[in-house]
Length: 295
Image 1: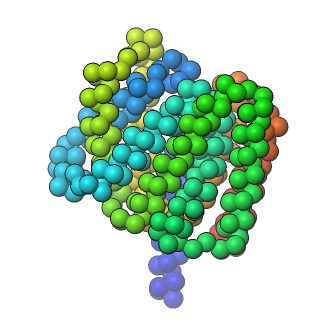
Image 2: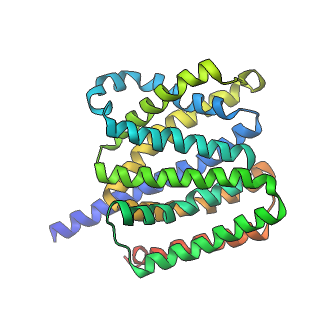
């Protein structure tokens, strides 16, 4: 009885961490699109996100340097920090927030499940694969509509797809290597900043003068503290407790929140492809995680 109670409490704790990560990820989508619309260029968004975080957490980075300056941690940081963020921000430069809200979390469970199967040996039930298949139909509908109606969005959509691939690899490696969420967060900040900052200051253009101070401050706070520090710790804890596949599936709940909020905030259009994608992703999430609703 005690063991069962402990297991239930642990699972509940995992879902609380997952819900927090879902809410922060929703905000990340909206804040990132707002930055792109305010003419904050991709290199500037990257520098604001990781440069601010590096300055804030530099005392902890130094204190834990023996744990985070490890080749595996550098790999995690390069993939889950530099590669993922660059691809995602690239997507927000060219595609609406509703597309990011559907493609980023919608594709993640697919990428994570496939990569977890091949790289981590995780086995998924037919029910889980069925849910992934339903979500895939919605994503395919959205990409098809984009290709046929407005190819200018396709460039951004491709960025979102590539970002999902990188995040899937990061999630599977995180579960395999079992670094603590705190060390993972510090490692991602360190690796990304040390790799990107020299290139940014030497070779890339800056456009801060075109953006309001309040927007830069908002981006610095949310991207560096909420989307990196809080979200990474919550995401990492949820992955360790619930597993990579379950966490990836739960992230598919983000589209409902982000897409509903993006329409009034940014005046984005509601299209048949968006509605189809949203319905399929939500239905796929329910089907793939039916066991969660029976508890």
